[in-house]
Image (tube, rainbow, N blue to C red; front, side):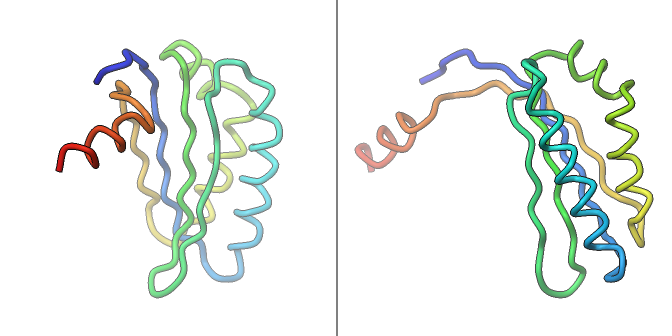
Length: 114
């Protein structure tokens, strides 16, 4: 079932040195609060990994390419770049165009038709 929802996804994986992990988290946390006011941003969050090769995965979801491009040119995005510079190895930066296929209805349909 396709609901026609479209979004752009920015996914960045940062590998901070242990002494820089809290700084990266602070930077990304401050970005979340500021980006929440942008109506074209559909969400922003990060996940801190545990174990060998610890990483921090930062994700933003955008309504349009134009909104994403404006964000990439903004002063706020300079903070993301600052966090990326604290990576002990090159960060992984990925952008995706995504079309939603549904939500809870997908789970229900799949589970009902096993």
